[in-house]
Length: 140
Image (cartoon, rainbow, N blue to C red; front, side):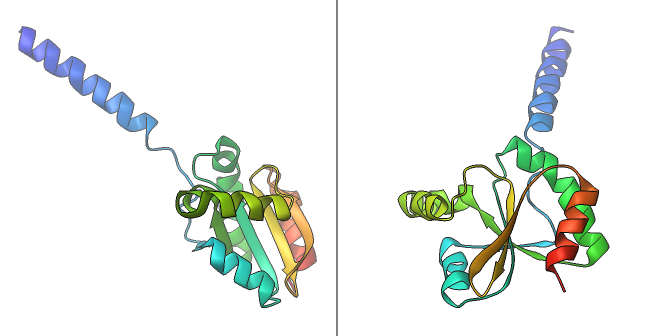
């Protein structure tokens, strides 16, 4: 009897821990992950388009993700995604400098680049209508 209780107790703790660790992050089918070098190349090559900057460990990014996914699906769009956690793992100082140069103070944020220059930014919030309108203004 004692072994059963111990087993059930351990199983309960395991399930709680597993549930806590399974929060949804930026693992979206509409996002194409890019590295710091690829982001810099977009600027250097004077590319135009959207880049989403976020990180899986960011609570605001996690809250924004369902809104972003929904809008991207509705608009049949994909975004380049710069994961600051992954970038910091490989090049922390370079990533910090890059984000400072881009004047990124908080995430989530989406940039619209035209000819390699920032034209507009959308500071992520859960307003689906505002996000749709913002994308509509810059995607032609």
